[in-house]
Length: 437
Image (tube, rainbow, N blue to C red; front, side, top):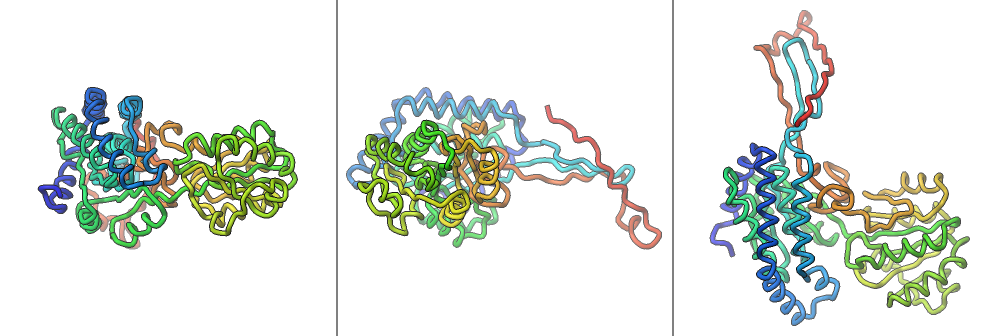
C-alpha cells in the first residue's frame, strides 16, 4: 500500500494535471526524452525486476499467453524507449483550435482542445504498457495513476519509479504526473474518486471492463476483449488468404487483435480450407470447426457454440464455413466484440460492403488484423483499444486523451442585448481557425 491514501494520490494527480495543462510542447518533449533515457540507462535493473515477476508467474502456473505478455528483453526495453520518442515526435494535441465563429461583431467564439485531466489506467501483465500510457498522458497534458496486474508488480514498480524520477528532473514538470497503486483495495477506492479522476481506462477482458463500468461514476474507455475475425470470400487469392490468416493468428497469438475465428465462403472452402488446415497444423495450431468444415477436413475437432464467442489468445482457432458475405457479416456482428475484422477478397464492392456493415472499430481489406495498433496506425502508441462509440474508438492515442473547451471573447456584451422582440440578432459567421505552430 502506498504511504499516501488513494484520495491523496488522486488529489496530487489532479494538481499535477493542472501543471501539465499549461506546459509548452518543448517542455513536454524534454520530459519524454528524459523518460526514454531513463529506460535505456537502466535495462539491467528493469530485467532483474522482470525476472522476479517471471519466477512468480511460473511458480503460480499462470497461462503461457500471460507469461508471454509479461516477459521483457533488452530489445523490448529499447522498444519502450523508442515508443516514448515516437510520441515526442507527434504534434501536440493540446491547444488546437477546432472551430471559430463570430457570433456578432466583437463577440468571437473559439473551440480549443485541452487535456482531460487525470487518467486512471488499469491493465494486466504487460509492463510495456507503462511507458506507452505514461508518455501518451504526459504529451496530452494529463496526469496518470497506473495499476498493473500483481504478476507484473516488480517490473511495473521499477519502470514507474524510473519514469517519475526522470520527469521530475525537468524544470516545471512534477514527478507526481505519473503515479502507481498496487492493491485491489486501492483500485476499489480509485473508482470512487470521481472528484479528481476524469477517465478510467481498463485493459482486459469483457468481464473486467464490465466490472469497472458497474463500480464507478467515472467515465470508462472500454477496452473489450478481441474476438476478431477474418472472412475469406469466394474470389480470394489463395496465397494471399493463407498469408493473411497465418499472420492474423500467429504473428502474436496473445494480442487482442489476433484472429480467433476464421470464416470461409462455402464456394471457396474446398479450394482454400485444406491448404489452410495444413499450414496451421504445421504451426501447431489447434483447430475447431463447424460441421461443414469437418466434412472437408475430418481431422479438425468439432467446435461448440461457445467457441464462436471465445478469445483464445493462444495457438487455437475456430473455423466456420458460411453461405456467403451476408452470413459472414451477420456472424461477426453477432459473435464479435466490435474490435477488428478482416475480409480477403479481390472484389471492391464486397470489400466496401463488409467494411461498411461490420460494426467494429477497425475493419480491414486484404490486410492483417494485427495492423490494428496505435503505433502501426501512426498514433505513436496507444493507451488502449476502445470498442466504445463515444469520445474515442479503436486504437486510442493522443487524440483520445484530449477534449475541448469553448473560449468566448467579447467587448462587454450582455445577453439582455439579444433578448426580446427588439433584441440584436446573432450573425454566427464561421471564421478561419488559427493553426497552432
